[in-house]
Image (cartoon, rainbow, N blue to C red; front, side, top):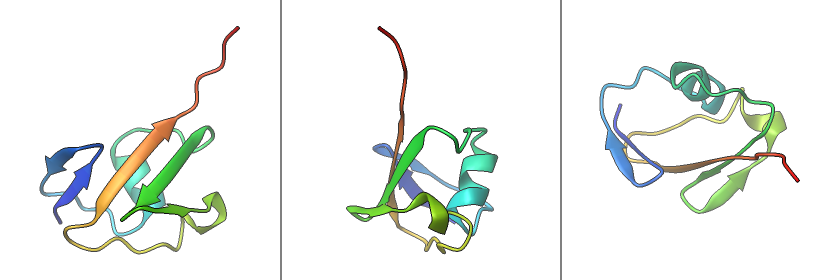
Length: 66
């Protein structure tokens, strides 16, 4: 599958869901927000939200500090 993730085209992904994609990219699900084709996906839907070839995905990591 080919996705555009944070502005970069990435080919040969095996992930079918957002949860699988985050695992494949080695990103912890705890403090991230994910948008697919300009729509924010709820964290509760990460396991069931199906990705399609050509989707545009934005992944934002939240960083604490002070």
